[in-house]
Amino acid sequence: MNLHALRVFYTVAKLGSFSGAAEALFISQPAVSKALKELEHQLNMQLIERASKGKKLTLSEGGQALYDHARSIFAIEKAAIEDIKSRTGLKRGTLVIGTSTTIASYWLPPYLAKFCAQYPHIKVEVQVANTAQIEHALLECTIDLALVEGTPTEQHIISKHWQNDLMSVVIPVIPPFLMEAICRIFGV
Image (tube, rainbow, N blue to C red; front, side, top):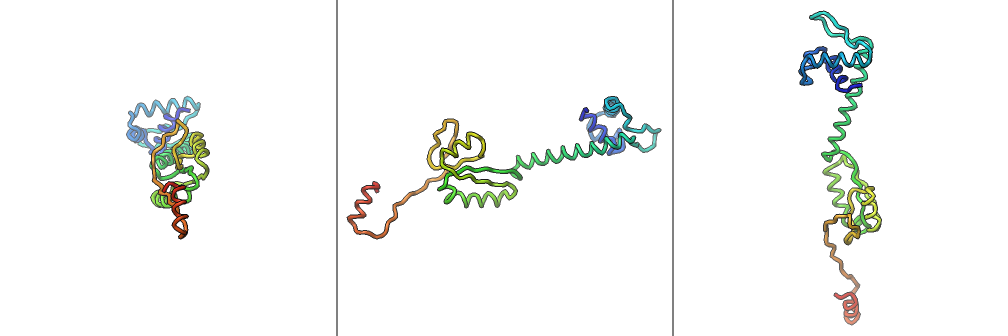
């Protein structure tokens, strides 16, 4: 079935007018008539009861059934378009983040809280694994974003430095000679 002709028929039936449909669809009135005739020919069925001038347009029994189906089809089309638009505007969808344990435990939570507050309809999933597993998941497209410690080894992954993690040696108060030995070992 030609969906353009179906849309023309649906618009004529909805507005009850050939000229109104032509105006709404930005086509000529003869183009509306032609599309309807082609659809009727294709379906081998009269869809609109042709009436004399001044009478209201009426649908045949088959035309009413087709109108009901067309209304459902175009409602689904509208819902699909709205759903796709909402996904491209960060209004809906799922974000899957793959991350190493340290980042998941210490760095990520405040960023997730901020993101979720700003985009409440985006579902966020976090997968925690070692760097090699996260790289593999990124290459397999099972995650959308990877946050790992260190530089990725895969040449197909583009990475960007995100955070500096200052590491410190923390020990209890100990005798100075032991402190010096520990500092030498760690190069501090």
